[in-house]
Amino acid sequence: MNSTKFDNFLPQEFSFPKPLILYILENASSYLLKKLNKICKYLFLKRNFAIIDKLLIFDETTEGYKESISGYDLTLNVSKLDQLKNNLWITDELRAYYSAPNLSSIVNKIVKCDIKLLNVFENDVTFNEFKILTASGNIEKISLRNAIQYSDGTNLALDDLLLMIPKASNIR
Image (cartoon, rainbow, N blue to C red):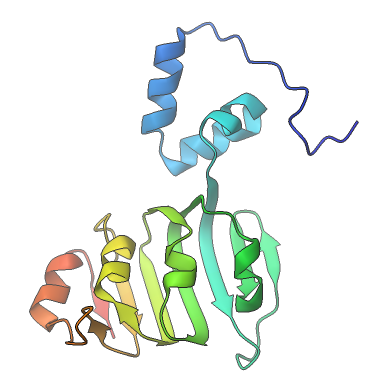
């Protein structure tokens, strides 16, 4: 029997009514969802998110990093981004240290983003990507090397940027 497949799982019978369990899953914080996923495979299948606290993406030119998984932290080479599924929930940090025209290769895989720290080097960030990354309004530290651009190529004004990150205290 292969334990990594869910071919033979049985639905969990809970003492709570099913609508209540579904409500809890829909409104669970990342912390609670991590705990629930440890308890029961069935709950993971119902709310299938890959929860990542800290995601660091690098390329061959970035020195000092190697691929690793530590708890809910993931350090990954940009060449392996296609191996990630389209169900990422990033909860704390996103650091992108690689050269690419934009961040769409990772942003398209994010379902929910509650990051507090955003570092982007060597990448252009489009306005739509920035909206997705800052939708929670939790960003406290942000470091961008390049300007944020609208689809027509114009840059996002600093005033508009500050409105999108109200909790930010460290902006570079």
